[in-house]
Image (tube, rainbow, N blue to C red; front, side, top):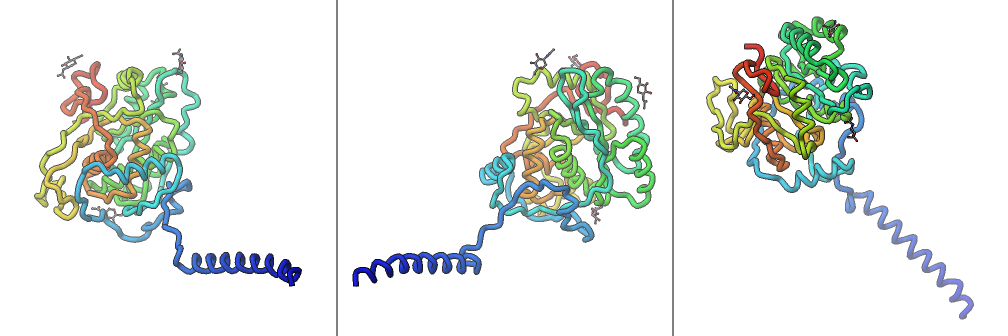
Length: 339
Ligand SMILES: *[C@@H]1O[C@H](CO)[C@@H](O)[C@H](O)[C@H]1NC(C)=O
Ligand SMILES: *[C@@H]1O[C@H](CO)[C@@H](O)[C@H](O)[C@H]1NC(C)=O
Ligand SMILES: *[C@@H]1O[C@H](CO)[C@@H](O)[C@H](O)[C@H]1NC(C)=O
Ligand SMILES: *[C@@H]1O[C@H](CO)[C@@H](O)[C@H](O)[C@H]1NC(C)=O
């Protein structure tokens, strides 16, 4: 009897173990233990993630209740920065396809001085060929020994009328970044998102990104000197700041009109009102990783202000960005060069 039991006992243990494993696996694949959906920063070219490529989509206007700091979002972005996944649900994954990206022009390996590596991204309109020509010339004339520390690219959307011209311009200069959303004033948020995404995905060797409109011009020598004086360069986010609390424009005729549905607060967060500003590459990365979790509003400057406020990133005012003209050229970081 005892001998029989000694044989049966291990068999029973085995059977029980087998059954529990089986039941567990069965339940987990049948929904009771369904894993939570997780989001990770795409490592592939966003072309392959294109969700709305063919669809006729416009900037979605949905409620953004507040621009308070968002601890959940901050934690999620911390994880994404460490290349971990997050279970925070993305609400804004609309992606467009790149139509033009520059070849391998964004590596700074050849830099000849010890100064910072600066990526200059210029929001430009398809029909502003003349401004782009001027900017290339001016940059070439003023950049001097910094030419391997500074790279300038233009950001464009799609224009049916000018597309072949844009293509040949890109073949000639290889400095155009373009996605297939229609280039228009109220689609600028797409353009700005493209800028941040491209910088963090394809130009991560830059130390700083200088964002500017195509009617602005940066005094690169001053900029580079200014950057070298920073004590906490990774926290740099500076430009001309409009303090939090300006009134949202509800007049449909205005080009800055924002509907009640798009943004229900009556006051805006702090923001850089276009023109030009500088961000460290760490801040550019954090913002671009947060975009999928913050719905779009059609005024891109305010959108960046909104995302920054949610991440607790402070915009620092600098009086060295001029909106009027370039009379104080020797003192400015950037100024409005073309009226
Ligand atoms: C260049 O930068 C490195 C690292 O930041 C520093 O150690 C070195 O002293 C710098 N050299 C010059 C000539 O400034
Ligand atoms: C840029 O400047 C250099 C001299 O500083 C000149 O030789 C070159 O032709 C210029 N290139 C363009 C495209 O203007
Ligand atoms: C914005 O871009 C989308 C995608 O190309 C387009 O369908 C929409 O009409 C554009 N909106 C405006 C206001 O141009
Ligand atoms: C021009 O720059 C100087 C410093 O170099 C500054 O003191 C002055 O206020 C600036 N002028 C204007 C009009 O901003």
